[in-house]
Image (cartoon, rainbow, N blue to C red; front, side):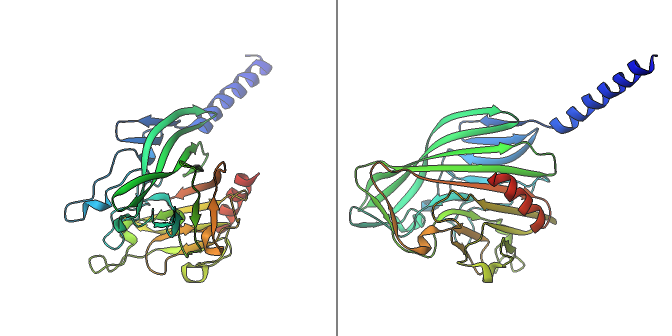
Length: 319
């Protein structure tokens, strides 16, 4: 064989092989009657719950809910998110909710659904699609105020959730949220120590009498742990522990375009949850004609957090 032809053939084979390696399993979106799934090949990255997820037997049905991400999986198949925990059953995977809010002169609590003052819920799927190695879905959620059994939709919220192709053993997905009033009346977020975009970690990380070994660790972009990091203003927060004998880690990055960036975070001193809480730094409101937007990126690995690697991912996200 001519050397030039042979060399060109070898290069073509190598290029083809490299393309296969880089491509890997494709990112896809699958919709069922109950849920939207983002998948990498046959692996599920996350599930968005369209249908009401009913509280387990023995738990008050008031905790049944929809319109949130759970479970979120690591690349080795561990569920890094939690729901229906024994201690705080209203916290559910990844969800967005205000806590101490005022609407038409009445207190509304979309977070603590057991207080029966409000809730968030899935309304409908708007679109699904794939593009350039990513897959996404867009959904509409409603934030409902409850006043003496009367219900009013206060906010319409649109989520676009996108999972991206990666060249390593990790998952990456984004949440873009936009909230607009559903009526002509404003919604006031009063100053409070938590609320906003929240993440509840694995129930196996909850220290309870029935689970005395439950524990997890936190790391922030400022190098703080869960106690030092509470109510600070980091660019990202990482939560990690062990699930079924395997390391599991999820990191949330707060985009610089977000309101009051870097947003304050509430990191609970014992429970496996944290939330980006801009209301910690004072009240604010959504007025008629305004859109409250926010963006977050999530990194999920089957390993302990690596601050240097997360910083590289942060730089990539914010370009």
